[in-house]
Image (cartoon, rainbow, N blue to C red; front, side, top):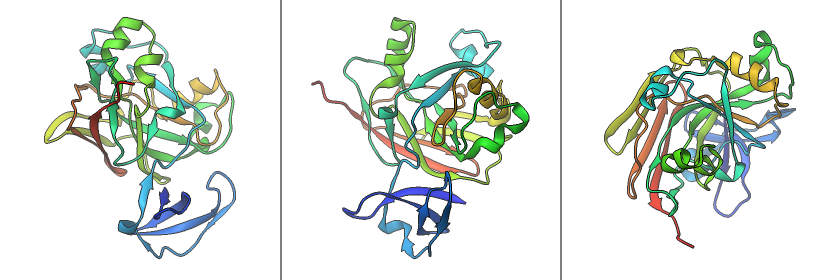
Length: 256
């Protein structure tokens, strides 16, 4: 099932599900009890929002060996985790805003895991039982600030630096899916999720040994090699086989 958050006109946002090119409302919560209503609304007539409103966004650094190599960094022995704030989240079609503090903002195409069930000390063999589904993420990063600060909170945490969408796919297999990223007509990134150093199961087990995972938390699983500069006027398109595409235009942010 594909789960969406959507808005029609000035109506409040709501959760729904997709049936081909039609949207139906969901009553209740997909993180608990729910049922689907008739898919009678055309997808073209609604505005898709970020499909999840995470309490926390846990990100994985250097989870593709080629990406670690392009930054002259070692592949970690255990998952390298950091956080992005929920205020960074935007949805499909929303603007990535380049902050005046940075001269080098880059894209990072990633598979995003949406947690569906609370858990702590989750064993790898039970990890996928805690997953609601998967979506597409872009871990936008101010690379110059990342190098300058040493720690990554500022570089990863600007508003609009976490595009997510366009929906949550509950039937997705994360073992071997192709990830690509285009900026305008230029392909920047291409790799398979089977190249991840740590699998989704391993990541959930490791993260839950540190912190409790809650429904709607998001795990960004790391980016392949090929990250690159974003400029005003660019259009970033991240595609994951079986999940669709997430597109976001780029613009210069306000200076005050």
